[in-house]
Image (cartoon, rainbow, N blue to C red; front, side, top):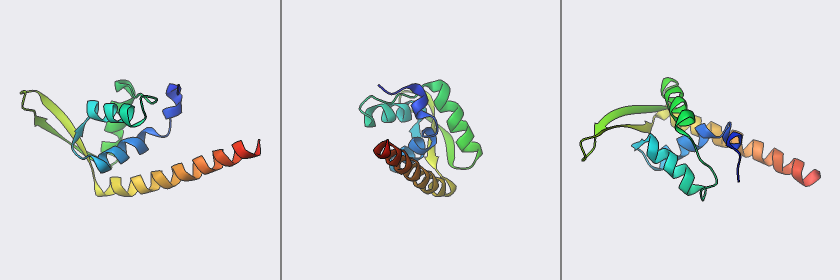
Length: 109
């Protein structure tokens, strides 16, 4: 089972990637997508996700809008911006470099 801190440094990447594939998602849907796509190995808590979403919105990587659902409840949905698409490419390149380096160390050890 993955430790919570194993998400450190990868949360932005996962959120940006999910929003690139599934625009207009609310926070709970993003948390659920991470859990389901990782076969329930990775779990993101609200206390980690919502500050990250706020930070990414302030950085201009995502934009948010309030909608009213069919149930009458309001939900804040998120989508990737052009700057977010560029950031996603940068984050993916960084992740590939880091995982390649870790794999190299594991092969050498």
